[in-house]
Amino acid sequence: MSGVRASTRSVGHRVEARALALAAVATTAILLVVFYYPVATVFVDAVFVDGRPTVEPIVSVLSSRFYLVDIFGFTAYQALLSTVASVLLGLPGAWVLARFEFPGRETLRSLTILPFVMPSIMVAIGFVATFGQNGTLNAVLGAVGLPPVELLFTLEAIVIAHAFYNAPLVARVTTAAWESVDASAVETARSLGASPTRAFRDVVLPQLLPAVAIGATLTFVFTFASFPIVLALGGFQLATVEVFIYSRIQNLAYAEAAALAVVETAISIGLTYWYLRYEGRNRGSGQGARPQPRRTLWPETWTAREVGTRAGIAAYGVIVLAVFVGPIASMVLASLTGPGGGLTLEHYLFLLERQQTGASYQVRPLPAIANSLRFGLGTLLVAVPMGVAVAVLTTRDFSGRAAVDALAMAPLAVSGIVVGLGLLRGLVFGTEVFGTRIQVTGALAVVAAHAVGAYPFVTRNVAPLLGNLDPRLVESARSLGATRVRALVDIELPLVAAGVVAGAAFAFAISIGEFDSTVVLAEGSTSYTMPVAVERYLGRRLGPATAMGCLLLAVTSLSFVIIERFGGRYGGRGGF
Image (cartoon, one colour):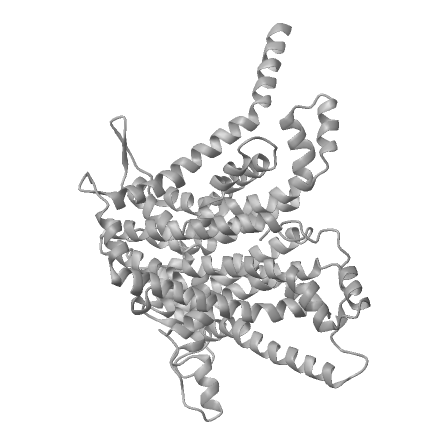
């Protein structure tokens, strides 16, 4: 009997010793099935037509003036304008957060996490409620005797909405860099006779430019692959690559959609690779520096310069309220306003009525909410273990670690539309494996798409914390007989639990708000989620769309609170 127990313990020890390797294999297998194979399917569709290899679809895209100029050219143009607007709107915010102390500063800084939490379709609804013909903007203009304006389905609306989404990102990364500037270097420059302007130009600005470049690059990547905002505010007449791919999918032109997706993915991967290389070279700069002291927002002595500075901050505050608070407030107001302009709950009552009397083919609110929550929980079950496993692997020293990190982070460079198209063509339609047709449909396909988009955020929250742990903690545990896995479970993971929880909240929020792949996979099925329901209601009536958007806002806000509660224990949130 004792021999059996000893044998069991020996087997357990061997399994435990290989647990990390098994986790790596399992994570790789999941990635291959739900990401690399579907994306490869899209690439195959672009070079195989009717079973024959051909480059004609890709050549037709690269040689077509319509595709290159009208589609890709406009996509790059709006992304460039959106990047410039985001930088111009985000840099003053970074300056205020980094250089001034005032009540609520930490709260405002926390709000810069919004681009990773707030569903983009909800932002689009807010801008429709603001800039529509009967929107908040025209109501304000009419109240002061000015003529109405129509900004919907214009490039200006798209750029402003993208700035709403990405200016906080620029502010976030630039604020972190500004707070890492060593005050001693500035003081040395001043002691050598440099004016405040010269000290800023020669000492501070060179340390800010890498952060600004990182924020601008991320913004360009995100806006180049923007889908729901452009779909809602620009429509098909202002179609970007993502919107045009979606229209091709709806028309069952899969080869054309795949060719466009291949070119777009190549561009996005190139930009993301440059970003990761650039970020890696600049990571850690300024650590341990003594930050510059912040000034009070209300100075003791009012000079002309101080008055001008505060006036500029006040003007910027008005712009921030208009751009960031206005659309969300407009969405809430539109959900509570009737056709006559009075307050009403009729839009929420419409949702209740649709739930009770709606036909099976109509979008009902409770299934949308239930699906979103189910998919969010399913995403947690997949994305959190995957994200933690990748974080552990990428913080270990071994040959090829950079390649593993790049392959694991590849989902950040591939848009949700491309992933959704790949899952649709590769798994939903089914594939033959040893004579057996394997299909992944419904909830499983949606959860797979959500998990692919969410787990990198878990990794980016956990990996920096693991990398900063004192290696002597693990060495001590190993010297006492603990296996590598036991040391990880008992020592390392408890110390990075806040990062795991924050990453899990990110994963849940991303799943709740995911629209790009979901709208492809939920097409014609009952797997629609809250964001898909918002878009489908928007095509018919604004009121119910804003009411559903407010429900989405409530769920998203809860995720944001969890992220801030646990993620606020450490700085930077894993590089995001």
